[in-house]
Length: 131
Image (cartoon, rainbow, N blue to C red; front, side, top):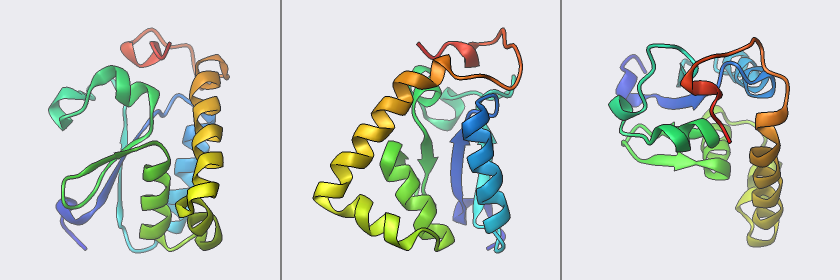
């Protein structure tokens, strides 16, 4: 898997402590180089250049599948877990209609709380405008 087109592209907020911690774990598990990680807090990141909406990519986890499809929120996590072949039980629960409701609720709560969580550094860019 050498070409970027074949990789699952994850758009994450590198200033978010929780988000960055999760991405670091994915990096460790990605032994085959299946992921391409894009920090949306980087000054040169352009959501529009990736075909994404700035406000939405700042608010929700986005991934671009190798076939070009964009997934957000819980669907993103499921795709990452399947790509890395991790969290098989969580994946099954998240794909179950009842379990999915709990995952969606939990993610919704996180999205609301995230702007108030500690950040890696003080920011003065568009990446801090999560509210």
